[in-house]
Length: 191
Image 1: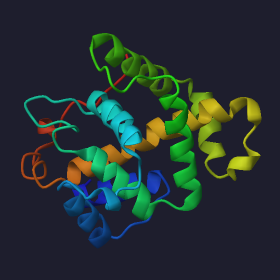
Image 2: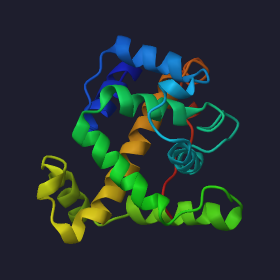
Image 3: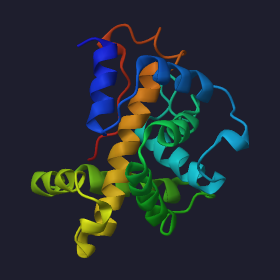
Image 4: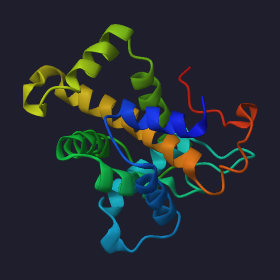
């Protein structure tokens, strides 16, 4: 599969339709330090996105998510391409994580908490993942109350991972490096 087709497939997997031109302009704009007025998330929210990004796409011999400032790409993608329900879903999951995770101290203990959450949500049983995927088609008000919080967190993390991948593979510093699939970075996998 060509890179362009893969990116379109990733966008479709999170229910976002964006033209190549839109994606390119978002990628270019987010590779600079956007002005605060251009950003959608508050700084504390971006910091949490940045911490998860650091674990999902870590620094190796190839730049990772933090070095590439992909948290700005996520911010712009959510602001510019997500419909209102997708935005609410993303923010609801983000807010739940904000209540439980530290963002100021990213030492080993704090970083391990991020790893633990990713491991938990990325290794859910297939039946639970399928149930949550079915929830994606429902209005948020119709999701069973006893499953909402867990679903919001799952949706946030899976969407974040997908948007990070799109940002990574469209980044001007990465595209020339990754000509051969053997050069692709190791994406966080649980366990």
